[in-house]
Image 1 (cartoon, protein in one colour):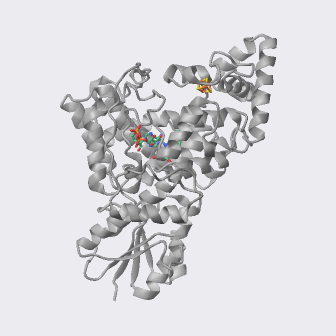
Image 2 (image 1 turned 135 degrees about the vertical axis):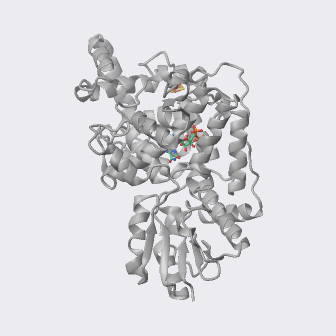
Image 3 (image 1 turned 30 degrees about the vertical axis):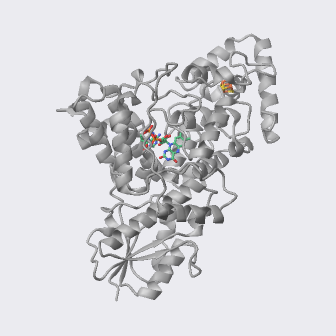
Length: 514
Ligand SMILES: Cc1cc2nc3c(=O)[nH]c(=O)nc-3n(C[C@H](O)[C@H](O)[C@H](O)COP(=O)(O)OP(=O)(O)OC[C@H]3O[C@@H](n4cnc5c(N)ncnc54)[C@H](O)[C@@H]3O)c2cc1C
Ligand code: SF4
């Protein structure tokens, strides 16, 4: 008889996860299930589905090789009930364990289901905290308690101290907590970008890819360029390659964008990290070691560590502090549907076509593309947060609601009432032109705001400021553009408004003309 049924979800692929702690290989069974419910709650990019299923199969095989009994349910198993709750109940009926052990799901939706397993399967269910994150939910709650606003920067400093990362005694290494001001350089023409390490699909991955292709033919994006690492060993090799070849330039060009350069100097760790194949503290320590041994400068190392130790943990804390209410917030009353080009990449706006096109090809775009191109457009055009959330959750290989939603609804759309960001990240074409080389070959003219060829970001930006002028005037970080708009000649404002109205009308008709 099975002693404990230990459930491992698709994003819990860590050998040291709480639910495997104390595993008795002679008596316990590990349950892993590929279920349709998780593949289709949004129309995920086929590369994301292939990545999760292949990584699950590799993880299960590694456990089996160590003598662990794994009940592995494949997506195309005719007995598969196609829901996690259904598979737990089915396994309990078959194996009659005295206990089900699980690690708390990272997403609110799945944790809610998990809390129903005990009733559904008529067996005690022990749900353990997910201690793979560096800040527990209780730590974040304590930190947030009594604060008027939650600012990532202060949370990050606490985390640096708590984990003793980049510290010199009780002071930050180099004397400053933050080197962001050095990390906003435009990419010089002709700079050589070392491509990331690629991982050709093995036989197990190719089997999964064939299954995904057959099962989800209509999902957005292609599988052809799939080359994600699907094991902890490969994920570590990919990260080591980043430390060796790209970390030193990560800071300088962190905010830069370039045509046909999907990755620049970014690490690409989000997809394997969110699956559990990498450990966040290991990543921070490895980056710190590169600073200590002189192979990467402080602005790059601090910038990278802030993303993992700061932003990643902060957005997770915000998510759990405010769910489920967070998922309904629409602070700027945005109502427009998502234009079709988000799903096709077919638009004359070169920056959007580039960001969306590479997303279709690789299920990846780097942070500034997500925030200042597709996110900025959605913000300025007033696209509904539900639609934008669904898109981000569907199209990226690293997307899970706990990290996707605070970034989308909070950081990009400012729909959360200012919890994640103290001001909207709104920008006109001038910012995109400064940080990229997209504009040179664009159909639109970035130096124009009106007329058929005027860059849509320009008119939309001023229209956005005008639409929200009353509330933005109260925000010290937004008061300047509100004042600039107020000082503009009325004829100019009229022209901008008319152009913006025309663009918004095109979006309302699906956006094909844009
Ligand atoms: C609208 C929007 C949606 C996003 N959705 C997701 C998502 O679904 N999943 C996801 O992992 N990240 C998301 N991000 C954050 C960030 O864009 C990605 O983590 C990053 O682009 C992944 O690429 P990378 O691994 O090369 O990152 P790098 O630039 O190399 O950064 C290193 C790591 O830091 C972490 N990180 C960096 N920025 C953030 C952030 N803002 N929030 C949380 N972690 C961060 C990630 O783990 C990332 O892998 C989103 C950002 C925006 C603006
Ligand atoms: S001109 Fe405007 S639409 Fe074209 S690439 Fe530049 S910012 Fe984007």
